[in-house]
Amino acid sequence: MRNLFPGLIVGVIFGAGLALSDMINPARVKAFLDVAGDWDPTLAFVMGAALLPSAIAYLIRHRMTRPLLGDRFSIPESRTLDRQLLLGAGMFGIGWGLVGFCPGPAVAGLVLGAWQPWLFVAAMLAGMTLHHLFTATRAPAPAYEG
Image 1 (cartoon, rainbow, N blue to C red):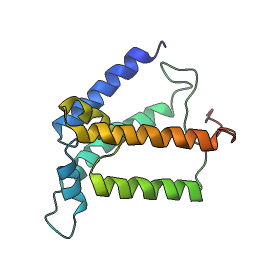
Image 2: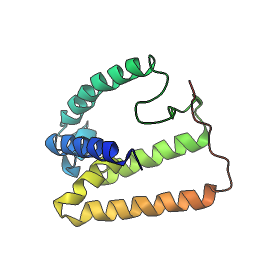
Image 3: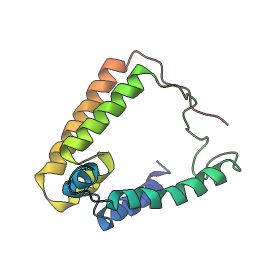
Image 4: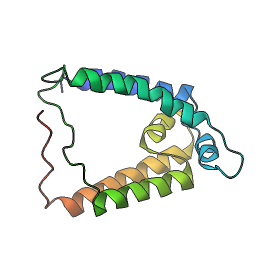
């Protein structure tokens, strides 16, 4: 509960960045994915701009023993490409290409008042619930302690 406020602030900043860059607009995302048609490179610039703070964060993280607001880092240890990862990535890509939403922009798009982000988020939550129900018997992956 102590991390709720910082998480909320970071989420609002992330959502504002998505709105400012118009990445909550499914038409813009679909235009980026349409490389054979009327291609819009805007999303490539947004992704490129995101690399700099991400790279800095990874450099800083290697010098820290623990996060500022947590007890340990939660970074996956596994580097293997398994069936579950490939299936999930494929489903993500197909869904992203079909509707132009992924989780972050869909949640940020809820404030627009359109019905499409609400439908997407409802379907996403239903999928997460089903995944939880069908994988509840598996042990969770260990968190990275390093």
